[in-house]
Image (cartoon, rainbow, N blue to C red):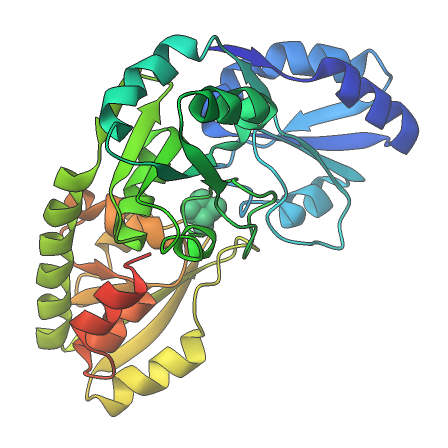
Length: 328
Ligand code: SF4
């Protein structure tokens, strides 16, 4: 993995925009690169402050933080734009320059029996898209990119909570190939009904994702059953601008109508320690990143559900409805 922080683009944009003070947000895996980035920005005479808050996706744009420190621009590294904001944000997507040929070769046995594949990539590989599609097409495959639907920035771009673009092409393809990491492909296998193959660039591996699907579905059924039995329920909302998956007001009413003692709790980020002292709450429904409920099952003592799963627990939707629409 050789990351390109697009220094020339960054400097050109900063010279054009002329900010006095910037708040820099770095995706979690690249926070270690803050010293060199600080040097590039400060050499231009711009004050530079780094956000120490977690930044798992471009849903986490720290507008409140930027306003609190008096910054006039946010520079967000490692993600593409996810939501529109009034506050000025410069997105630097960060490219991964990697020789993908060995991994693409490795993926061929996994897609041997498929003629048409759906393809999606994490943002760091967008610049390689032409080469990747040509590689597959030269080997007789038809490649269809996932659609640009919802908050994804480009055709083929994949984000861990937005799978409508994959669902839109699933009837045209026999399998999906995802280039990126397990996070994106695990969401895909829960969203679509076709086989999902991950080209895992970070672990130099290619694998099918089917095994994980069944394990997660079992966990989801257990969580739904626990919410059915719960008396006290906490609805968790986060203040991150891109993390509003469902209306807390509406859900509160629905849960109360179903006989639950429900309350709404707000926080900057849901973590196990933050909910520990709400020990009278039997189950939580989170309207923040849906992947917290799905991926972090083992981290929480109490069940954590998504909005749609909560609707199953109160009998408004069936489990089959959810499976039909896709878990994510
Ligand atoms: S809500 Fe979750 S999955 Fe979606 S962009 Fe944010 S961190 Fe990623």
